[in-house]
Length: 615
Image (cartoon, rainbow, N blue to C red; front, side):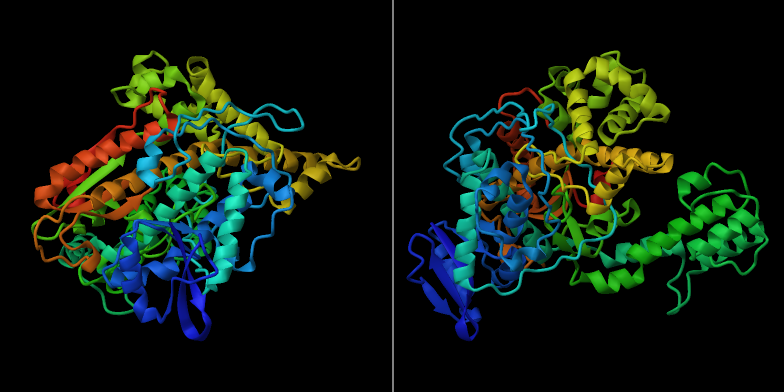
């Protein structure tokens, strides 16, 4: 059963069964929606709505959780940008509605090269997402685009890794008839795409992520303000008056200015600081810590210390506490699908950049525990599965992947293995990475060929696609103009150098896309499966909790960071939850890679504080 939710005239809300959209199930005021949804939820429908962030918060506030949904905003971004759907769009499918422009990272499709990495979808998907289409293992080989160029199977590195937070725009109120029309349009595109089963799984996982993102904000991450303030006082000193800097930062600033012999330089101005450094004979191109550390000068150490404290003060200082910690909970604005690769972003709070020194403030409620799990070396393991590189998967089996590469005799140290793998996935060509990557190519030719082909596609301006069907954006018009200028008969050597540089840069972008994007898909399937498992656990007892009516006395997800999750659970359910977390990770690997023998082990801990899980 699929039920659409959308607006109706006079500020009302309509519920429509897509099997018979001409007769609404109900038309009611917003206040009556939670009760109506709770009643219909007994039939286990898939709710179809414009944007989970528009509809789901009010339901959770009323204590109503839903099992499944189809998020049209996120689904529309995927089908519009996917090279697997390009033929269906070219066949005359209806254009996307204007309200979908709020979707995060809506990729273009002009000039797309259809590249389909293999995907194995096992029957377990039925249990995870209740999609009847997933009834057999599905293993497709790489495709070749119509022009006959080499098959490509990689993806773009997230260009804004850990950078600015996403805008988090919402889809506005959408009439229910428009919701129905858009859902049917998306389903037609999926059904006629190159790999409909994989695309259906991706949309189901992405929509589950939409629900989880809202639930993470609603439940909140348990946070002890007293512990956090003690961290700030230990690092920065006493809380300063409004508009003043902490005394420890002022002392460091004085030390830097004295060493530079420039008593008025503003250390918070990058332009002014860079000028001051150069005047003092420190020839740097930026104020980045790695570049500063290359210079031996008495100003460097206090400057690095000042910058570290300035970051703590601005990102997680007393003002941050006042804004983001309410009733003992940190409730950031997550944006599922907020980056090009499908990785999440945030539109406030900085949840994806919590420094280690404040994690001690993440403390379970009395009678509760935190189950913290981190997928070890997720991206290299996903690369092994995508490429079906048995040698690389073997290096990871039952051990630390980097240690396995050392044991295989490819490199001498674990640090070298890590540098080499990251260099291969992110396109490093110089330094230790450039020197070590050729060794990986000899030891793991299938995996290295996959990312090399991806880079080649990107250098030509093509798209590459993840395991389930999310495609990289096409290069912007300025990129294509740069390439065109280099091909002009009057092109200069400068034009040619710029074109080569831009092509290599875009190739590095696409090199990692399929790895990072497919890893994001693995994480979504892991969380979706775990969310379902947790919902089947009986409430432990009547426990006082500050997570809201929808989560009282039951284990629930409270944090997600790319390949790491935290579950807040009653203490007497902790071992059961930890086992479920590990089992769902294994299930996700089998779902996406079938019987290919690649492991997805977890660093898993049951703790009272997030800081206790480190190391």
